[in-house]
Image (cartoon, rainbow, N blue to C red):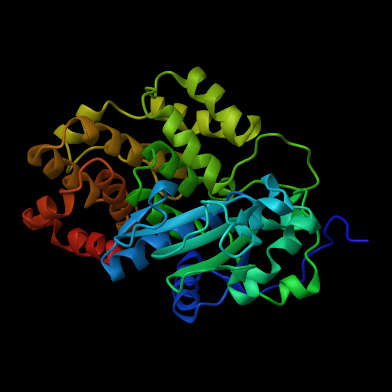
Amino acid sequence: MVGRAEAVAAAVEVSHNELKALVKLYFKAKRALFCWGATGIGKSQTVKQAGMEIAEELKLEYTEDISRINDEKAFVVVDIRLAQCDPSDLRGIPIYDKEKMATVWLPPEMFPRKGYGIIFFDELNLSPPLVQASAYQMILDRRLGTYVVPDGFLLIAAGNRLEDRASVFEMSAPLKNRFGHCQLREPSVEAWTRWAVDHDIDMRLIGFLNFRRTALYTFDAKLKENAFATPRSWEHLSNLIKDAESDNIALIQQIASTQVGVGTAGELATFIRVKDKLHPMKYYLDNPDDCELPDENTQPDLIWALITSFAEYYKAHTDTPTLTKIIGVLRRMNEEYAVFTLKLMVTVDRQLTQKIIKIPQASKLARKLIDFFE
């Protein structure tokens, strides 16, 4: 009897960029790929990002709109949750064909007849064995009964592992053998920061996670927490606190508790509150060459708080004179901190790099910032 899944044997570990490369390779080869990984680390998002890049290469419009499933001008990612399906949902419904004098199957509209895209069986192993079995033929032979998967579509699946405390079912050996397998690695803070800067994640969260690096992913299977930190929950939190001012610590902490857990939310609130120990921003900008700066060795929390404060101030003052004054202070700081400050400032001013290039004393920092995005 097939039951709940046992621990998954290790698959080859890949980074998010390596997963995108695999998706592209499997798309060209028309073979099926299964991506394992912890909850909330970006499996689905990375598959969709790979789809966007494939669409760009094919000069097609990327979409997840099911109504465009057979639009040959679009690259469509069809997200199918097998856990919500019955076995009959995949095969379709039987109808009588008067000309053939026989019963034929009418496939569901979520399956494409033509065009390009990805049929994405997300959380496949949450579905019971009978539903998984219904997908066998489609995954191996790219057909299900009389339905044939168009050549322009990739079949890909993703799922959690047992150790993630997910209610997953064991996949049978024949179904496993129909896929290539990889395991998505949890992102490093550096990789997540690169993504976060490009996706307008709240700069206070980026600063905090670079200061408190272990807070990016706090899931512990031994603890029965309802809320815990993952890259996904940090993204959700960013959207929730975008309009919350830093002086409203109680509100930010309450919202953060709902997404990343009470303990991590408390640490975030403490980090934001540390800014009260800094001088007013005017002090630093009026005295860039002489202002007192926190000690980078003994006051790292104040350094990260100052970095975040510069980025927040620049959000409301994206003019060149303000930028020049901030650069004046950053030139006195460790280059790593200085460049990171500029990374945060890019989130509120996409023209920042072009502005920095025109500031003579910032040429070295500008080169470092450009390297970050290459």
